[in-house]
Length: 354
Image (cartoon, rainbow, N blue to C red; front, side, top):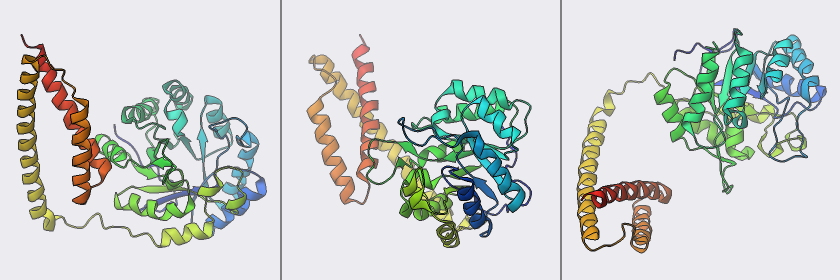
């Protein structure tokens, strides 16, 4: 797929591109005050939630289409572009009727191919930038599928938004970053820009700055940040919004790495990595050969493949070892689970042999 730039006239192409504004458009005064604060700090694209899909009923579900004329005031009085989330074909039509400049598809909608297709059908023949958030669950194919559906409707000005993935564990992040997923998206679709949403990943305003920096270190193209003139009084997601002042401070402290810098000085280190990877593959192949021998023994002695106690001991011991060596326990668990699954597969093949 070939994508065209989503950058609109007058928007600085320098990384990071910035989209900012409140989680929800609440009142006309709140929209205009926030937009003025952002415009004064050089922000060109103003985002605001008009329709808000909430996890549970009873929460503020957005002001609805009556807020769209407020965004037209932002355009006419401040010269800013506007961006709105759409979840239905009706939302698309109402946004187009009010000259919204950029549309985005939210995480809950991306997870529903029927809803994405409905939006894609409504966009057919329209030339407008469309941003697509990752689905709530860590499913790369579902994310790419949503991008393909919109692309097939003729939309070429597209970008992906990484907003993290839902989890029952809310100790640190509202949504786990799982950075490897947008990295893999970039590998499969190298031409699509990727924008980070630190507000939804972090869920707390103190996490926005470090998440913005992480996104820049991973060479993301832009940021979409929730900013409110009075965050503590926000009608939705108050904890993850920052004032325009704070947003300016965060952006001014970002370190943007030079992506044009030569990588010749990394050649020797990269050769080491290649050699180590070769060694790892050799060791894994040897390990699998031993697993096959174990499988043969189990077959001959009518033993079941899965030995739960042994597997649990391996997990606990190896994870503890890895942590002492400076590696994350979760990382080592993922590696060991993958190795164990392949060992089981190999042993099952042995069991099938006559």
